[in-house]
Image (tube, rainbow, N blue to C red; front, side):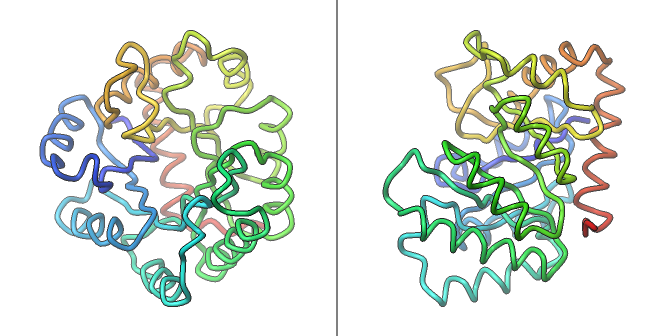
Length: 257
């Protein structure tokens, strides 16, 4: 089975047709989905899905671009949700300097607060990093005491080495299949298979040859096929290794030294 380690299927754009999305994902060979939620409403939807189908796990956290209107009551609600067994990760959290709605200091405070929550409960983090590589890595090195996953990675080989040295994992999405992927394919060749995942980040970043359509988990097969090609491995080997990776990161505890 293929695992989609980052899917926003409880966002408004996909939730209205969730039955179709889930059915088509299963038909495509997707056997597990980590539903990533950026607010409590999405989280409650995801928890209901996880209660009815064991193919789902849940991650929840405040995206850096959403921190401008988070109140103390929201933080308390997040903390309560993170304690639930269906919630296996804190995320997506991180830094995003592309958009200007939230200033850098507010982003860093929110990022660190959520890392501290992850440390306290021993659950991994799912990291969003956009145009903020150095600050993100510095915060992680200083504050993170659990493992995690760098979601939709699109950085350099030097950055990969720092992430791997921290005991974290790399996840790649649709951009790996793009004709203008630039150096990303070569970077991914350098990442050991036992530290790799694939994801959709749906409804965004639809892989080739479906660019322009709304993304959903069924399209992960294209990213997965590209990764198998780059790593010169079989589908069966990659599926087995990523299942082992997933169980190691999200099921077996993730405290780091």
